[in-house]
Length: 103
Image (cartoon, rainbow, N blue to C red; front, side, top):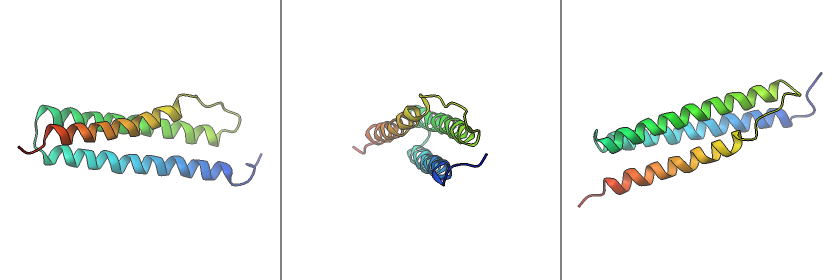
């Protein structure tokens, strides 16, 4: 059975673009944490950034796999989890910046 139109393909590509954006954010957060030096806050922030990235990778893999297997239901928690990951990246960045302000 063929897929109807290009909508499933566009959706898969959108999930991969989201993962790419979260990858860039995670790497920038890791770079920011390392640039401040190795202290407890930086290590925790870097570990949290990488953990969030792994979660986003799993969610993206599940969503793309569900789109490939037509008729397979997807979990309703995956999209809010990706949104929460993006928000948590922003919070981690703010924490890193505020805990390492000069002066």
